[in-house]
Image (cartoon, rainbow, N blue to C red; front, side, top):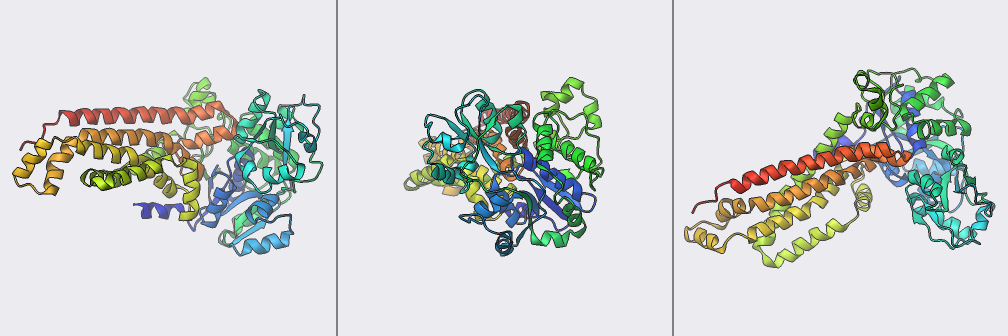
Length: 526
């Protein structure tokens, strides 16, 4: 089954796959690329795949063909250069990986540090070294990047110990006084909205982060017409234009598809009036009513006739985000992940539970290993699986879900079998039943209620854990959660969390019904 699913994770030859990271600007640039290329090829946008390492792995594995990246990130983070190098050298090294860099989009989105506007005593980064009590809330990627916090702290002698904080939540945390310093992108729209003071990088630590396209070299050859259209974007997006697009999404509440379409239309670029290409992400914001209906697959929140039948307050509120066009697709993806993962966990977990019950010497080993696997953080496990499997998407997500579903199934199978009455075992032995017959005809039926309780626990846990699948492009309700985090949109977070909670409750109800039926079944007669 996993082999069959693996085949679905590789980019189809007739489809141009555009990727994006998990922050607003990347979502928008991905939509711009998608809409420009759509009139010339079949295009799919895999949105919000995660951080640089995950999106790069997807590019190298052929899961995506192109995404918007930043030259400083390619130079220092991907190629691991200790200092900035020439574009020629970057291209030479990328070519050995089957990758290329092209189409500078026209703006520089460098890193900066920012504080509230009333922090008059701090004007540049060097001033931070003289105020060790300041609280730093930095994005997790910035903390770990070679061109991020480690080098910055060393260059400026900063004594603070930063706390990891999702970038989408950092601005609100700063406004509420929960942190004092955050990392920002220079094209972030919220800098002006929150009246932040951007600290001067007076020692010139941060390099330029010119927006470019990082792509597979074979993509330009496979989609020549689409690539020619994409190349027309070179130098067309100014810093002010990018800030305005980010503001349209984060402040004005427009969805990513609409923002990209409006900018393309204003610039008279090909693709602005073309139908939107299919997209794998959930709607991004509440403003779903102004986008025109399309005949293509559901995109990031275009309004449809179904929306029109809803009250206006529903279309623009939490209910509108929950019951949008993508609800059916996200539900199918989420259910598929849960059902397949729990099914595979049962196929592996029940035999392991039997093994633990039958062989006491192996019991602690089996239960110990499955217990240790349960303690591995989900995102860390996904990060390990991606390079091991060489892919993102459904397969690594399923493997992670199976790992987390094993323990309750193994433990309850073992417990249920050990609770079978010794008298029944002796009676079955006296009747001449072989070990396999005793297990199948007597012990497993008697242990079934306990086993079902373990499967129920695994299924309910999997419904919640499956939301992490969206971080690596496997879909499900987590797509809305990742977009909500990127935009600091509480309604979008709830639009992902509420359906997942409802699905968990329904799953629990179904299994409780099955347990009730199993408990009423007549006991085996000897």
